[in-house]
Length: 280
Image 1 (cartoon, helix red, strand yellow):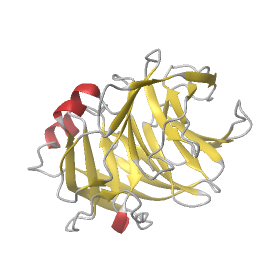
Image 2 (cartoon, helix red, strand yellow):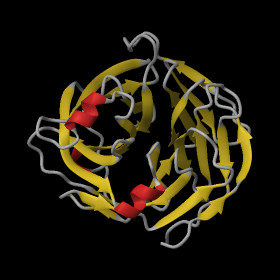
Image 3 (cartoon, helix red, strand yellow):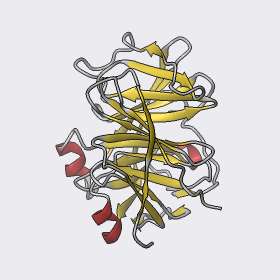
Image 4 (tube, helix red, strand yellow):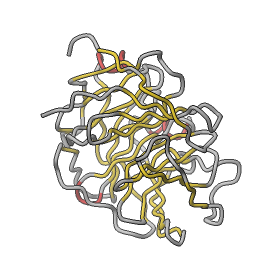
């Protein structure tokens, strides 16, 4: 893989959230969520700086004292999946109403090697959410240890993840999903990424990880085998200046990463970095 090169910060903008935790692209819009505020913010990607407007979710029966939203994944023009860390679940939301369409409880069953870590530390469960085949979801566990988990209905066969593979949202409604496959970080990648604060699929179809503590972006191989195992990076970049609390990542069509920071302030918490060299 070689020594990571650096990505410079081109400019800075604001996201009107006190604790930004996740970003996503939906069409020509950027979406943002945070740990504290019961709202999803949306802004057209052009012009810069961004002009945000919010969708208030306060009436959806969310936990008091903070939403614990960690990530979101659009599944339609007005529908999104939102990952909550505590309780550990995926909310299916209609932003046009707004309304809650369903909830997927995320269960790490007895006997799984990560069960104690999942239940014991409520602040290092799911940090990122991705779609894969068969209506399953990929959830990234932040740390202690970091891991990539495939969740689906109990008894389903794991499908893993592959670059360019079809993605199918889970069926709408309430259900319990259990861990079907687990990938740990390989020794080298684990040293470079002490934690995983977000993940995204880039415009080249590759899977990218963001590390807050490592201040780095890593590109993963084209396949996560359905049998689980370990994974290492095929490329990596450091973020110049090592910004603190990098919590959200998207990569635009030209390879430009946008990185959101949990600054506890709604100012100066969105970085636009130098473009990545996208995979052919």
